[in-house]
Length: 212
Image 1 (cartoon, rainbow, N blue to C red):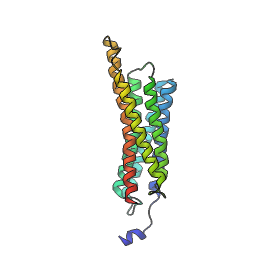
Image 2: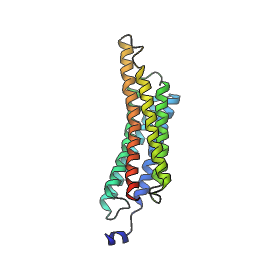
Image 3: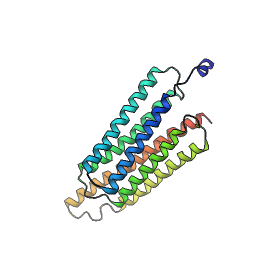
Image 4: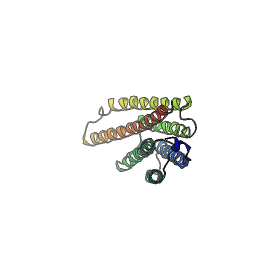
């Protein structure tokens, strides 16, 4: 154990984490832009899919580095867990965009735009929090970011409740019922994306606890 502390720690992991977090922000911002402007949906969803592929590549590179590094700056299970959680966040963002295209949604609702904004806000805070891991793992600033990510997830829960409450009020025929069902799935995916953000926060809190 003493020898392990004397060995150099590979800083590449923090570079990979910063790249993954930056990718999270870019994907979330593209999703928000899609919901706000709703133009050229096909092209926008392809761009988000590109972000999902980039996230997969970063995760693969990080896992490869993990397998080839003897001493790591964080516990191996924490590195693997955080990488996976960041990747999951982008996966859900991409799935929302994909369903939006597949279902040929005419226009997003205001509550859908709100959920997209919450996702984007979470992504920005996640990037800020991940940047602290290299030197400030036990900082109060990191804890404030974790709390904010969780607060935003609660806001997402509230938005989902409001969306579902009136979802079927105007479903008077088969066409409107199908539309309502599809929106129900989209709302659930949007809220689940905020849950993925909360999962990142939980992993960050676990890492922080180890350095308390």
